[in-house]
Length: 294
Image (cartoon, rainbow, N blue to C red; front, side):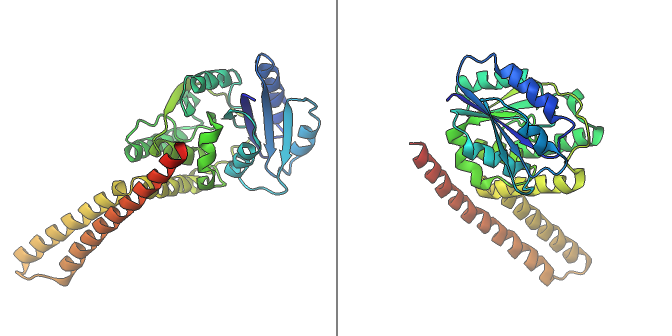
């Protein structure tokens, strides 16, 4: 089978009927074998009943007994997928099904991960747009690669590649961030296609403050796993500069050397050593992935 389309759904009774019908109708234009996997993540608003009413041989419905999270639903979909390629698209109706073909086209060109990058007009609000801008810049620094949309819910990948990283995916909304950074830092290729989105019905499940902090936490974890010195070296340098400035201040003010200066200097050295050790561990991890690729 060539394509598995995965749609995670949670409490989308206002959107899922029309959206899934739209997806099914669009996919009829495909001339190759495909499947549509809808993962109901423990919905409690009647979404399950709506999904069970769909009778299409190309559609598989999987129900979680309780709510696990968007990332958990995606992982369930990928584990049950049979296609060479997997494309994930949110079930809230924001994305246009026609963009599925554009994602697939880039995957067939040889890219390991293809992400739909939303334009500025497609952002839900100014605060969401600003938050995504910050995430993108921070992730670009971590990955040494321009990240155009870290949190986009429309993305496709080679199933054999993305399956290697499922154990790293959190169950919440941070799975897009993790998949982007993990695949990039493991040496796989990434491509972006520009997309537009439409306004969804109902309220978004993402909470800016709570999930925003989770995104930063995920970026930090991925950084320490794949590029430890991106965090440890700046922290070490900051501590070293602080130690020097504190020494100069105390020397010219009182002419005395204080214990706090020494503590800052030792903290700088130990932080740098931790970064070097972590970098070696990261190299061993890369080696394991390269062995799997062979």
